[in-house]
Length: 336
Image 1: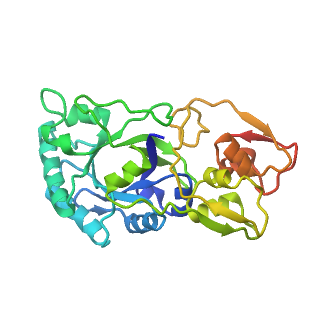
Image 2 (image 1 turned 120 degrees about the vertical axis):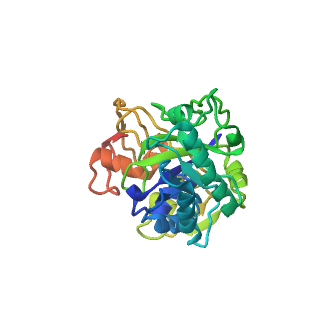
């Protein structure tokens, strides 16, 4: 596996169930902290602490307005993050999306003031976040290509393909040769978030991600869990922040109360996006063909979800199931 999945969020994704998000395979998150000189995202504190509790690596970002004072924008951002007494693990980021009518050379100069202030405050170079078109049109030197000083800054690139599969790479803007994080979808859906969400991947392995963050990798020792009445593969996976696929692979037997399960160390599993409007993460618009499956003896929704690489909530939704624990042998299910 060459990429590690993550997400980025703001006010529009409030009320997140973070253990469920981590159980989908997400391992990092970039969280909006501020915008311009005067706006603080009201959900930042909850997002920051919730993501940490669930074990995701975190960075924060500022939505930049070139027509406002860059030093004041940096000061607000620094104040919001520093107030948490926890600077996170990943570099922070400057979100470059709008010109506000400011000329290209002024955008570059003002952004550099913000970057310098953040590097001084936190001790490392922030991400440059932007799209291919914005970087080529509004953040390039006259001869083409990025400002020379950006060569040492990690790139968080927005570029949205019609379909994403693990191992893909984005289209690169002229003069940029390496990306660190790729935002590949604006219309993702994840268990634990009741809204569309941006989906990202880190360019490297899980070990590479922890090295980039400069922190120790999570405990890789498997845990033991005793099955209690009412437990399901999904509920146990959510509790420990692993995916259902990981849990079922380590414990292929059916669940019975009193069973001892091995809970493996979590491994990041990217969310694949297809071209269908029913896709969990796709940003395309075409309809994907429907699959069906006839329930067999011993099946439950968790086993079926793992078999087809989908999720229990997606199957429940696609089939309008009133009770996900009640399926019958021979019942034909639509597999999203």
